[in-house]
Length: 114
Length: 111
Image (cartoon, rainbow over all chains, first blue to last red):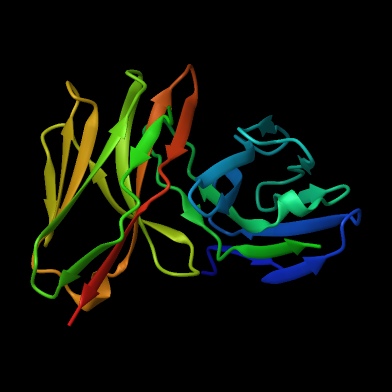
């Protein structure tokens, strides 16, 4: 099985442009997450979804939006990119059952906003 | 103060050495604890969970000290392939669960 995939692998984006980062998992996990990882700051949660049809804000949600139309897909959209959104973005999923916490990560998307 | 703090390192050790990392957490509602490993330019992957009584997986030993609010990871007989960043992860019970990742400790094992 593929596990969790992300696209694109990397992208250079002009400031002010919009972009959607794609994330798909085939593990039928209920919960999905978007993180950004910046040097010295670790992984910071942007948005999450506990189950299809629901989403929630994480630690750094401003400038980002998500949707969860089905179990497998959890796209992240930057409506108008700014240079501070230059980062590595990881999508993750977890079973979501009580006590089952391991998160499985996609390979990441490296985004540069100029 | 960060909710989860780690020494960023880097720790430079020779092959065969024993190395230990600590991670402190500030929220007393922290309920479960993990170590993840992240290789350069790769995604994080679960290394091991940390149980209250301490647990071992081969050369790796994880311990939890609730009174002092820290967890540790001990690596014995270090291998070149252990070179990576080790992330401390804490789940906090806030009604639902909130997962906090530490910024990581970098380890370089040299021949």
